Image (tube, rainbow, N blue to C red; front, side, top):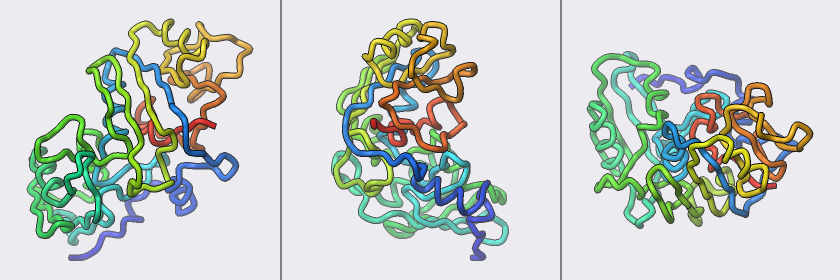
Length: 270
C-alpha cells in the first residue's frame, strides 16, 4: 500500500499538533484529583454526549485544534486510491469489564455503519470503502464511531472513565480508570458527576451557589455581573460557564459546546 501521510490531513501546523497532544498551555498545567460536577441541559443529548466521551473511545480522536491523533488506533495508512485502508490498533487495551479489546471489536463497529472491515490479526484491521475517501480518518472520529464490546453494552467501554451510575436523561457518575493507556495526558478529575436540568435558571443557580463546577448555559442573565466566573467562548456569546476553580485547556474544541463531547477528560480542577 502507498502511505498517505497523516500530516497531509492535519488542519494546522506541527506546533499546534504538539499543543493538542497534551491539550494544555505551557502556563496552565492541570493536576489530578477531585470531583468535577457538571450541570447540563436536558434538551438534546448533552448528558449522553459527555458520558460517551468519558467512557468510550473511538479509533481516532479529533483534537481541539482540528488535528487527528490516534486513540484505539495507533497508525492508519491507505493505498493510492484512498479506498483500501489498514489500521494498526493499540495493544493491551481492555474494556471496563476486563475483556480484551481487539480488531474484532473495531471491525464489528465499522460493519454496523455499513463499512466493510476485517480483523486480520488482533491488532491489524483492513477496510475496503465503496470509493476512495482521503478524509476517511476524520469519519472515524465521530461520536457514533465509539467501540463497544461484543454485547454492545451501553456502559462498558475502553475510555478513561468507568460508569458507576447512569440514569438516562438524568444523571451519571463515572470514576477514573487506574493505569489507563492515556496515562497522565488526559482525564484529570478522579470522579465526574453530571446532572441534566431543564431550566437554565436552575443550572445558573447551581453554578452560582457552588453546587456544580461547570454549567451549560445559553446566556449570563442569571449570573453575577461582577463575579469571577469563566465563560466559553465569552460572556456575550456563552455556551458554558465555569467556576474559577476549573482549569480550561488552552484550545477548546468547537465542534460542540461541550468541547467536542470530551470535556470530562480535558478539563480539570485547579
